[in-house]
Image (cartoon, rainbow, N blue to C red):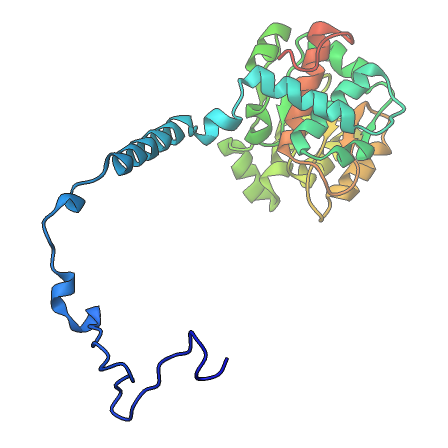
Length: 288
C-alpha cells in the first residue's frame, strides 16, 4: 500500500516523533526493578485448580512407587518351578537323538548343567553305561570323585535313598604327601591312593584330565575295574585326549567329547543316574 493509504504506518520525524505527536516511551521491565517486586494480592494464593493438579500428581507417583517391584519379585520362582520350566525349555531345544528315554534324561541333565543345548551332540554313552551304573547305585556302591566340586553338587537326598556314599580324597594329607614324593599332581596321586577301592564303584571325573588318565592306567593294569566312569574333565590340554582314551576302553562310561566338561556336568550326570536308580526309566527328570 502507498504512504497515503489507510492503515499505513505514521511517518516519523528526525527526532523520532510521529506526525501525530511524540511517541510515549515504553518502559522495559528489565530496566525497571519495581517490575519484579512482589505485590500482595489474590494471585499469591494457589488456585483450587493448581491444588487439584498437585494432588493428582502425588497420587500418581504414589501408585507408581507401590507398583514397582524388586527384581526378585519380578523374575524369581520357587525352585521346583524353575527346574520344571528349565526342562520344558530344554526338551524343546534338544536335537533329534538316537537314544533311549533314559539316555535322553541323562543328556537333558547335562544340558541343564551346561546351559548349552549344543552340548547334547557331544555326549557319548557306552551301550551298557546306564544299566551298569544304575545297578551299582541300587546296590549302594560308593561314588568317588576327583574334586569336591563334583561331590557337593550331588543330591544328598538321592544318595541317602540309594544308600550310597560319595568320597573325594584330593585334600587328604596322605595324597598330598604321595604327590610330592612321586613328583606328580594330587589328582593322579588321589586315583592311585584309591586304587584298591575303585573296583565296582562309580567314579566321576569332572575337573582334572590327569585324574582320568591315571584311572585308565589303573584299569589297563588290571588294578581297578569301576562299575561305570563319568569322565568329564574340562580343558584344552589333555582333556580331549583323556576322553578319547576312555571311549576306546570296553568299560561303561558317560563322557562329553572334546574340551567341554566340568564339575557341574559330572555332578548332573550322577544326579541323573541316581534318579534312574531310584525311579526307573519312567521317572521325572526333575523329581530330586
